[in-house]
Image (cartoon, rainbow, N blue to C red; front, side):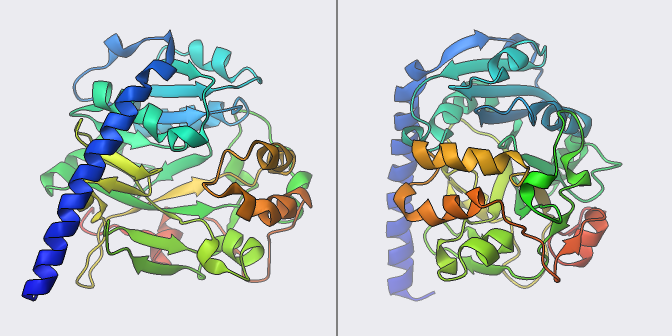
Amino acid sequence: MGKGEGISDLAMAYRLRWKRRRLLWRSFRKRHQLRCVRDNTARITPDDVLCFSTVRNEALRLPYFLDHHRRLGVRHFLMVENASDDGTREYLAAQADISLWTTQQSYKLSRFGVDWLTVLQMRYGHGHWCLTLDADECLIYPYHDTRPLPALCTWLEDQNLRSFGTLMLDMYPQGRLSEYRYEAGLDPFQALCWFDSGNYAIRRKLDLQNLWIQGGPRARMFFADDPRRAPTMGKVPLVKWNRRYAYVSSAHSLLPRHLNHVYDSVGGEMTSGILLHSKFMNTVVERAVEEKQRQEHFANSSLYTGYYDALRSDPDLWCESSTRFTGWRQLEAMGLMSRGGWI
């Protein structure tokens, strides 16, 4: 590294340090937007793996989402319910391993729920391995079917790692989205069992040093004319939390930026996982109408009018190159996830 590059990197580190402080202060100021519905945090023990999530109208997905992550080894869920009207709040409030807060404030103006979760992570997540997920994401990792999440977290700590990266994999059915009628509690990936395996572009962001991954059926179907506008698919959802940490953009990147180093920069492979993404249930068609009106899910929502209109048309995302999901070993063989040294 030359002298000029070294000075530039120090300047960037200084700016990001202040950015992290501003994000933490911003989140702290928004603590009053949350009203506690049920506080079960006294049940949290020091070694518990915690899960944080902001949800709205997810009563259909939540039974499977919770059961899946309980089976992995999550011991407590800290959740923010945002203006639901489908029974989500009541369902979550009845669960003994969930602490629940509610708010009617803007999801978009809370940095898409990140500000609210940061408040809870500062207070309850410090010293714990914490998952930060949306209700339509299910974590899998190498050996997840035989080795619990606490074992993975212990191994990561033994490797002096404090974060774990994943690719968010959009799963979809064969046929129009409305044709598959999902019932609460069932495994959604029995029908959402297809994915795109080889159309991903990856670049490393210079400022936060995270991987910016784009591709999958959304890039192929909805952003083919401008693929750089497609959603980013890389996430860092599992972190050994410290109250001084802050997510910058959903769970796509964090500060301090060393937490984004979930890849091997010299050509090897680090252990990584997958977030199976159940966005493309039949309900996405009707929700596209609502989300287009609410404009709460994108920073520049007006740019995504065509995306919502395409979803409203009830598309078939399947194509001849679609791949049927069979398990984590298949994803590893394709290079979409890696065991690394976790054997």
